[in-house]
Image (cartoon, rainbow, N blue to C red):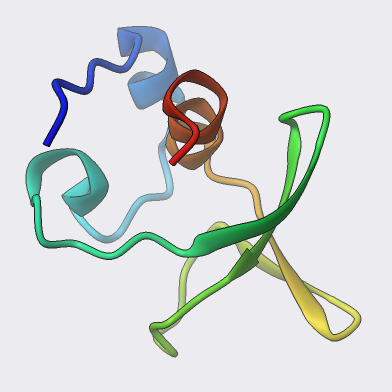
Length: 79
């Protein structure tokens, strides 16, 4: 896995993460798959986990991810 570094201010702004930042520390953690991106700011995602997430927002038949770290991962590393 590549060396992933997230700006500290982005991590600090991710105040509602109840998953202990698994996306940054667990190489086996599966991120929600980005299905569409609008200007790297609005991420439509398909989530494999059915568990509740503070950053997942229902939008019609889709979900939008509002997690600052997830947006940064997509923007910088296209993951």
